Image (cartoon, rainbow, N blue to C red; front, side, top):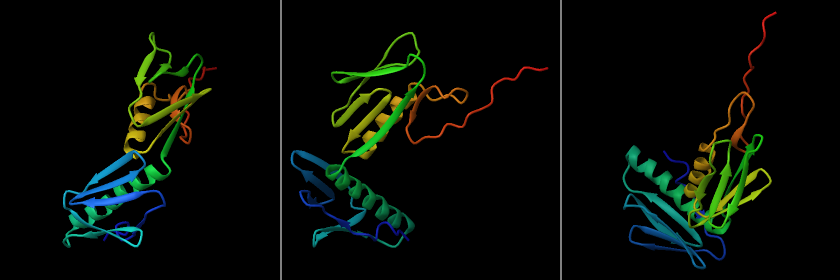
Length: 178
């Protein structure tokens, strides 16, 4: 039984939510976020809240119920507050800079890495901290994961790109025999 699906989603001021068949549209100003339910859950908007209901009593319908509730809540929260991921660059000579719509990373390779900033994302660099912001939680997380994947942190010195809240477990280096 989904406990997440039971919770109604409160619609904040300034956010407009509409249901058109199986499509839930969340709008704020010019920004629109859509969640396609494929007819797997029922959707109602009442008293400033979005309420999703199960269709059927199978485990699969309960799973879809919770999933689409979470996706709808993320769409509303993304347009209301937005999502942020921060990454930290550690290493001698490792740098990052935003040049137009490209994030240029110098991570110890023989060439700089150019990451094209997608539409809907905002990337900023301050010293060795990269901040990825956007309204789509999946897009923000994917972009941060791709940037981290260019040079994953290594366990001996911790050099590389890591999330700011990530802990790198350090290994002991080689020891000389006496």
